[in-house]
Length: 76
Image 1 (tube, rainbow, N blue to C red):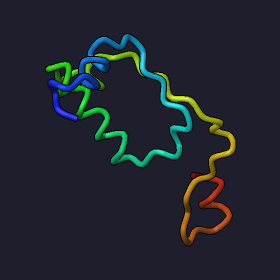
Image 2 (image 1 turned 90 degrees about the horizontal axis):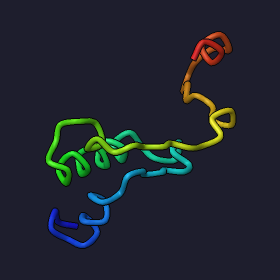
Image 3 (image 1 turned 45 degrees about the horizontal axis):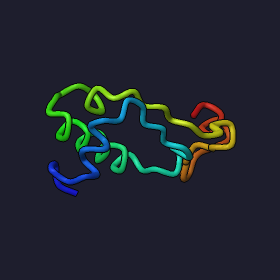
């Protein structure tokens, strides 16, 4: 998707962007969205200045503690 594509025009016109199941997205994926929106909107504002709504059931999301003790899991 280039900055002159029809998809980029739709993103430029969007007032609100909703991302559901945000916890399934990697941090690199979120950085990519931020980079693309900054590029398309030609600004350094986070997410190109667009209003972003991130939705998920965060209570179901557990921290990733590969070799932690019970105390480490509770702390994270």
